[in-house]
Length: 203
Length: 213
Image (tube, rainbow over all chains, first blue to last red; front, top):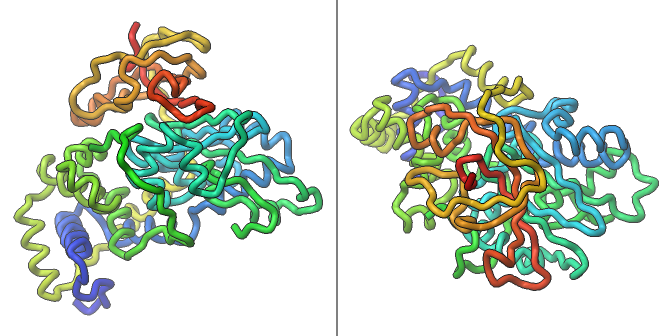
C-alpha cells in the first residue's frame, strides 16, 4: 500500500478496535474511507453550536424569524442551511422571566446535532442524565446558574425523534450589538439550558 | 442500565472546558462508520443490551463501537472472527485499508443537510391537547422510548404530533415500521419523586402505546 495511512500503530484498545472494525467494513464493501471522512470533516468544521447561536441571535433581532423558529425549528434551521441527521424534527423552547428550559435525554443522548454539533461528554454522562430530571436546580447551580423560586423549571427529556434547543433571553445591555456580536454571547450551554447568555462571556 | 432518569447515587456533573467534537481520531472514525455503514437497525437497543457495569464505565463512542459490532454480527454482515483477524493485522502494523466511493461520500454529506421529512399514516390520536393521560405501568421488554420513571404517571398532553414509527417496535423487531401518533406530555415532578422546592415540570415525548387508552 503506497497511500500514507492515518493510523500509526494503535495506542489504545479502543483505537485498535475501531481500526479493526473500519478494516472489516471497508473490506466487505460496507463503508468507504471518503464517506467516513466526509462525516468527520462536517462535524469538525461546519456543524457545531455556532449554528444554533446564529439562529438565536437572528431570533433576537428579527421577530418574524423568532416566530418561525418557535413554530418550526427545523424549518428555521433549514433557512440558514442547517439540518439533517438527528435534526429532521426540532423544537425551540423559549426562556422567559417566568420559565427556564433545560434539555436532557435520560435514555440515551438525543441532541440536535445540526445546530449544536456533537453533545459534550457531560451531557452524555450518567450523572447529568440521572440527576437533571430529579434535581434540576441543584444541577444548574453546579453550572453556576441560580434560579429564583418564582421561575418555573421545565426539563425536556427527549425520547422520540424530536430534538430540542433552548431559545435563551437576550441579555440586558445588548441593545447596540449587531447580530454577529449577539451570536458571540450564545454558548452551547445556553442552548442546552444549563447557562444563560451574559454580556462579556466568551462564546 | 441506560434508563437513568432519576437514579440516585451519581455525583457532580463534570464539564470539560473547550471540549472538541472528537477527543481522539478513532471517535470520529466510529461516528463516520455509524452514520454511513449499513449494519441493520437497532442502534440503541444494541447499546442497551450491554452488560450494566460496562455500560456505565465505557465512553459514548465505545457504546457506538459496541453497537456497530453487535448489529453487524447479528445481521450477518461480518463475524467476530473477522474483527479479531483484522485486529491482529492492525496490531502487527498493517494500515487500515482505503476505499473510495464518491457516491457514498456525497450521500453522507447530504444526510447532514436539510432534507425532506418522511410522512406516515396511522389511526387518529386518542388524546388531545390538555387531556390528562396515564402512562402504562407495564412497559414492553426490549427497547422502549418510555423512561421507566414515568410508569403509571399521570400527565397532561402539551402537544400532539403527526405519526412516526414507534421506535420500541422498530428497534426491537428488526426495523418493523409501525407508525403511531405521539405526544409531548407534561408531568409535575413532585408526583414522581420527593423533589427540591419549588418543584419543576418534566416534558417527555411519548407514543400512543405508552399511554393508557
